[in-house]
Length: 459
Image (tube, rainbow, N blue to C red):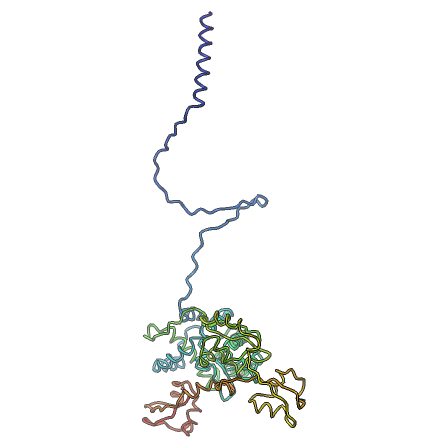
């Protein structure tokens, strides 16, 4: 019995010693069995909102955005909305463009600074991309274009319609020629016309050319005679009958350019200019210098100004090429306020009035009153008036069209070919048929003979 008790005691002691040793012994790490390598997926970190019991992503793998059009033409064509129509009037215009590739080349070159801004406005308002080419039909993309009906600018606004859409027209400035303001007004007007004709863009375009009243009268006339009231069935002025087919034809030409082997200018889908608010009246000659631009180039972007300064009461917005804008802003910020405009201090003499003073300085009574904050035309001898002036001869006269450009554009001779008409030739050089006839002392009814020489001006 004693032996059994002793044996148990020894066994207990041995077990206790063994357990103590195991507690302090180094552990043996067993390697896991080899497994195939699997490429890890991107980890998405999350924060758990305990209150809402929801899971909110901190970041995730970004989704690929649809690629943006690389060129202006890609973008424009992607916005086309008007159905392709097979009509002999469209086909006639289409063939004309194909026979005059030099006209398409000239249009592209003129349109280059303006197309991005035009497409921005068109896309923002949900308009068809074809409308970006409307200035090609209206003005041949010439911002200084001026018609016999007193329509002006890229979009050819007449004075009353321009004012209705907020385009200022005064001694200093004509918003119809402002490529930024007039594009906003034109796209707004086109949107209204589309709404008036329940989304019928052909009737809307005809109204832009002939007037909404004229188109509505033609529709009512057809209704009375139980005739169709679509654009192709209406009797409208000849110009309007050709106007819509002309736009549809040139839009189709640009869409078919690759198949037709027509070279398109590589115009990136990027802004060509930025709008800079200069804050107060500024000499345009000085602005061109600050932007490191020639006056010709400067007025290509800013054709709305009539005089040598921005207007006293604005707008003071200038359009500056993107690659020149930052330096322009830096230089403008350093320009002292008293050097923004060149002033001449005029001492009023006995017998003078504002009309005489305005004539002397080639300015207007209204501008002198604006600058000097005068409530009336009353002046007093011995007092002084501030007159804005310029030392630049180029800017001495009104800027309805840059003088240098007019001088550089010499006349040339065109030799009439078989089948040529006044309309064909005027379209080729983006001029009016009546001007062509006037320059050559002819009537529009005159028959042109092959080999006949015609004078072409302003091309």
